[in-house]
Image (cartoon, rainbow, N blue to C red; front, side, top):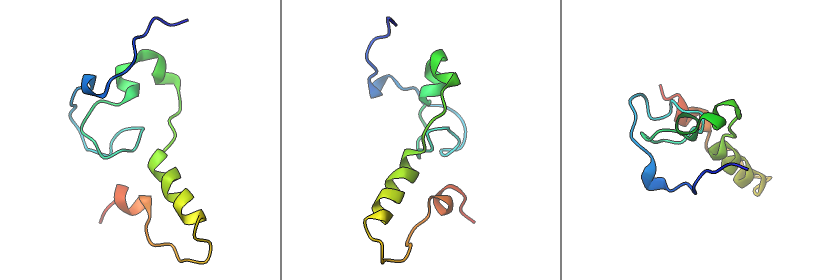
Length: 76
């Protein structure tokens, strides 16, 4: 068992780089979990924002697609 203490958001440090340049794909300037903990570096992250959008779209099967996570990640 690991002797890690519970994570608190206030412990996250700011980092250099683009706000979307992180594996968690959140718009943030904080360090990612992958950068903070060595054991997380071998874990694939799930793009939670993409999953939230897909779930919302599945709830409206007859509606047209209004937004895209790609547009947010890669603006013109």
